Image (cartoon, rainbow, N blue to C red; front, top):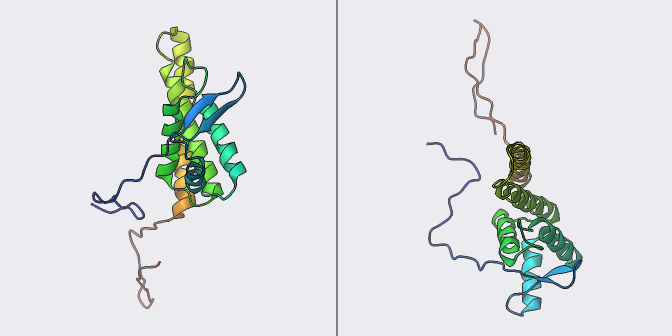
Length: 181
């Protein structure tokens, strides 16, 4: 079995990080926000800044607003604590190192939520609507997987493997065979 470069297995003895939980509150029909679950607002905001790899509180606020909008579950008026926390955990698993990677990680989490939301709405609809929703889910999943591939290329760089199957060297000619890195 050949190892994939950059894909190390996690250690079984590695300490588990504390999950990032965000409680969702609705102030009025328009204003929905996330708050610290344990009341430690400064510590929670610091963890979010670390999660989003930024020092900007405005970037954190904008990112949370995007996630809240994308994480609304079917049949609910707003995003739930569980759906927002799940999206934050998706971002945490990607471990962004700067704002550009964080933006792509947020996009990935939003696409994941959107595709699962469309998929969950497929029960109880007409046959024609099932086809429309299945097509929408497939497009969202395709975009999700492309975003994951883009993220991996952005984070780990692009590698190209050229395999030479056959080399013909004519008499009197010279050839050099080497591993090129």
